[in-house]
Structures are given as C-alpha cells and as structure tokens.
Figure 1 (cartoon, rainbow, N blue to C red):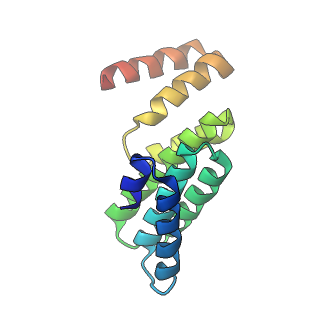
Figure 2 (tube, helix red, strand yellow; figure 1 turned 90 degrees about the vertical axis):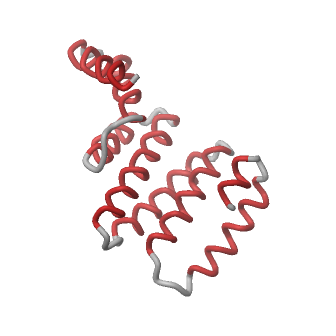
Length: 143
C-alpha cells in the first residue's frame, strides 16, 4: 500500500502509513519487513528529491537486510538496496560512493542500473577508454 500511494503521488498518506508501520514493526523481530519499510521510505524520499534522507533510510534498510538469515532472501535484498545507493549517490554526483555501491551490488546480482553509472563514471571522471568500451559493450548486451 505504501508503494501504491507513493506511485500515485499521495506522498503525505504514504509517509503517514510508513510511520504507523514503523511503530507497529517495533514490536516484532522481522528484519525483512523492517528492511522493506526503510527501502520504501528511501524511494519516497528519492521521489521527493530528499536525497540525504533517501541515503539514510536506505542505509537503515541495508543494516536490517544484513541481519536476514535466509541466504537467497538476504542476497536479493542487498542487491536491490546497494543498487538504490548507487542511484542516490550518483544523483548527488558522489561517484566515489556510487562506484563503491556498484561493486557491492554486483557481488549479489547481475548488474543492471549499475552499468550506466559505471559507464558515466569512466567516461566523465576517469576518462578511461578501455573501461568505457567495456561498460558500453555490457550495456549493449543488456539491451
């Protein structure tokens, strides 16, 4: 429901619902749900242009995801969350952190959003022709 409200741009209702869920989850020891709650909060803050809060909420989600005991679920969560960090840091033009999270995310899943950021980094910051060619080819393969 939180995602639905965010998607249809009912931000205030989405934030209120997340606050209520956060209070209710405080009584439970379900790291998966807590991780998803903070991931949704990060997405809401990102959509509102509050990138600092998006990064902070996503880091809280990562902290809960790390505690997940089911290996496949943990890997899936961390892959998604690290990818979120890539997006938020690249929007802030903090390529050092974006690249760090690119490689962390790629440890858990095949790169998708990360490839564009890596290409931009090597094209605009490092100007490394070999890396530019490599990531450009990787992007073409995905298309």
